[in-house]
Image (tube, rainbow, N blue to C red):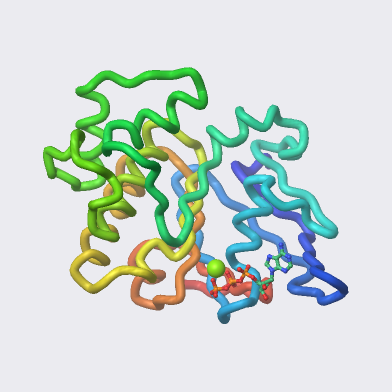
Length: 215
Ligand SMILES: Nc1ncnc2c1ncn2[C@@H]1O[C@H](COP(=O)(O)OP(=O)(O)OP(=O)(O)O)[C@@H](O)[C@H]1O
Ligand SMILES: [Mg+2]
């Protein structure tokens, strides 16, 4: 069976230190898998390997049955999008930030499409003309999610999406993630330290040791 995403026997060694070895993971469409593990265990490293920003010491990542190294880099970057732990905004407005991802792929979205992307992440702020850098952490995180969604990815990788946020912003971002999972036909990998968050969103939780836990 071909999986949406398949990690096979991934190992990573930095300067002779083995970070993890023999890591396997499958992800299907409409599935959300959590990745958990102590700080420094390599969770962010795994996400970077999946989007081919890092090459693992051993192992293969298959996207729809084909090694990620076979894809044209730009195509891969559109189909699998990593939203990092602290969303970085580029200089300019929210509109500039939303169009930025599209422009890399020589695309452009109408005003209505930008607005509905913001609605999808529950950011009803009428803020397309606001300077993105002035938004709160939770708002930036949701702009980063909207920016990713406009590219219609098939896999969304979320690296501790709420760890830098206060409780109120966490709830807003969680509600955005909940809508994405419910409404989009995608596979989601979410790194989280938060057991309640893992329980709420994930179908399965994978420990970085490779050991799997049911819900
Ligand atoms: N490019 C690199 N070169 C050398 N060491 C690296 C590199 N990238 C990551 N590391 C090391 O690998 C380890 C794991 O890093 P990683 O960021 O994947 O951990 P993490 O599980 O995401 O931790 P946290 O929960 O704190 O975010 C760290 O000790 C880090 O210093
Ligand atoms: Mg990390």
